[in-house]
Length: 306
Image 1 (cartoon, rainbow, N blue to C red):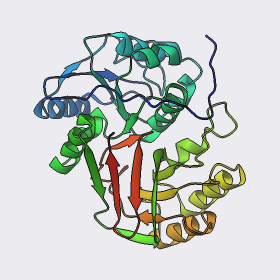
Image 2: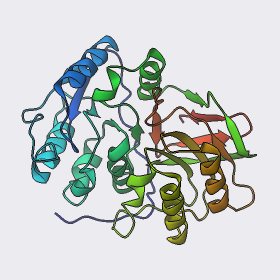
Image 3: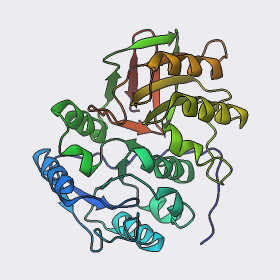
């Protein structure tokens, strides 16, 4: 299959608005998962009002992966092709999503647009699908993280998937690193995973985007190195705003904030931190590829669906 790499898409595709009673297909594009946390997450989805469909072969294992690359890619294709499925949520992140990028049939996804939800290692898929297809994807909880999540995380996911006229995400512990507002499509995700796209055909350029970043269990010097690498590669040129999610077990947050200020040194780029998005106990859902306004002074990201 020939992959067509696109730097910028002229058309953004909104997936179907999800409502209670709709069916979510379960994907496993990365690592295998524990049955206990998976079952707890499936129960949570049911409590949230969704029906679910588990495809054959979801529990496959191939070393540190949930099946071979071809198997995991084919399961994604089956879920996008199935008209009885209204949206797709990943079972777990971990490792391995990057290996699928050249195997995915992006034309199939473009012709069968559905909400696709995940975070962490899944950030590579969110980025590639939005870049290649123009489909708005969702940086949000996965099945194995939903079981022990609180109501605010679950309700935030429901609100985002409904694609209501207005979606507002507030930084509960908001910190304004640079004042201002910016309006642009939202991009980004897990910092480490996005760095792994560098030098590939799926490397992202975030000019004219609000860039969201989060990570977990990375030493401050590694975060500094990754941010510097992105800057040297030109990926950070011309961003319209920066929002920082959770940086769990990453050391001194003030030091991380100073690193971010160093690499985003352009005047007028609003930067806000303290959003409960990512690997923390709370994990709000962000539509990726959709226009939003970041108000760094108030610590608020607002989507207006038009």
